[in-house]
Image (tube, rainbow, N blue to C red; front, side, top):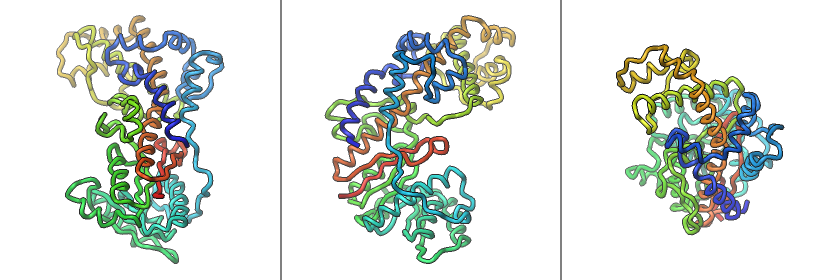
Length: 414
């Protein structure tokens, strides 16, 4: 992939639609709704729940053909067209190798291990350093079944005790290597001397779902210690800080590419995997109750700004509105004299239902930008590694239905 060329396309698209991603619908409502093309909102108004569900899953809808909204969706699809790994077949392993491993983790391991084995055959690195390795499932499969020594780093000593105990139970095949557990906090200054001992030109860093800035720390350690390379999968972008953690590359900085804010990072974190129609309907219900509560606060308490009120059990959203709002008003400590009937009449009124519908449709539009923003962020990381002498690939490793954070950055030292 030509990262600079793709970055330009991503940056232009991101800048043009910044009014949509740089704030939530409820921030600056009702003014925020005016940022969304009225033509698109009207188009979506005509769709059934099933058709809206298809839009949310990025599937084509007959009624949208030939419209500017379809063009918007096609552009997103093109920008998100990241190649899938296909050249490395999965390595067959006995079921016992995955004893106690969840389906998602098993799928990830089966996709990652063949790639690392192929890289080791070509680059001859000595060992893998698994960041946030937990109980060591991935490290164990690498070491016991494919003869690749692994160092599993994690700050949770209890996880590692479990992992060490399990190592004694799993059989080793011929040529198996050991797993070393290191109980340190990756990126913590006090642990830097220990990290320097293992990060070198003979090691390869592995980060399976490195949260937020942890991915940046792995990238910087790779560069600073001139390691053989890394394979990293990012997640939890909402914990990043603008201008500090993003952007990294000189290319983004020198071209003044858009800098994501908290709302952009959060949107990039949002899962883009397909769901079921029932799950979609639940999402509609949750948003409607949450938005209706916000509208009620605006009208009756003069609270225009968005207020965090926490989550509640999903079953609450399928109960009458007065149960939900009573719980939330109590949570905020707001005294009132409204009755349950007042609450339900407010929610069921034509005006509120109309507003809720428009707000949700705007969100359906806004959510389409999440994957673009994630790729925009990942391409910056790829460029930063390229600028520091690494040969870089960005590919999709996992099936979205099992593991939506499926973008892997493979960077190898030239």
